[in-house]
Amino acid sequence: MKQGFITKGIVLTLTAMLMSSLVWAQQDKASRPSPPQTATGKVGGATVTINYSSPSVKGRKIFGDLVPYDKVWRAGANEATIFETDKAIKVEGKSLPAGKYSLYALPGEKEWTFYFNSEVGQWGIKRTGETTKDASKDVLSVKAKPAKSASLTEKLAYEVTPKGFVLRWENIEIPVSIK
Image (cartoon, rainbow, N blue to C red; front, side):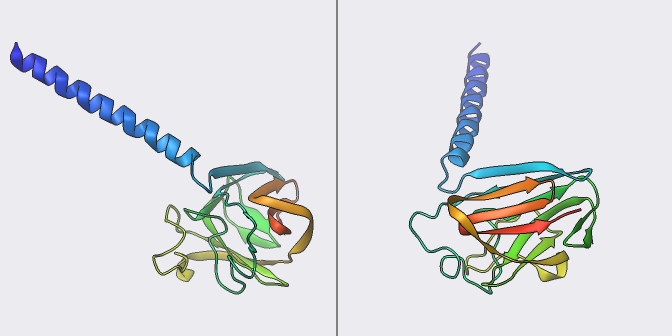
């Protein structure tokens, strides 16, 4: 009798601990300073999805300062940004097979390079501050031209459009064409 009572108590305690940790994990993601976001849409016949964490400007100078020019960036905050397509596509005229990729960017004042990398699921930066991008796993790199946006974009945002995707943050936007 005592053993059954103890076993039930242990099971109830473990269940409560598990439920608490699941609730805490959900609250933790939602309350992050750079919360997770998803942009999805159709480009031609392909469904494109971009999962990223969205930091805010908060009065800071972003490009050329917080995000330095000519240094690879994880294209968001927290985990590396994930770009997924369910069909083969052409990004800026170059072929990208269907699949899931980490998306990195090399911001420049006049030109950006976007890298589609086959390694996914990693945190976006190392303890040294460098990105986790392993160049040997780059599947595709493309160039894009930044443009001044019409207004300030406080939170980093991606938008998937019928013509490709656009990264917007601070006072710039970078369109990337997809067919």
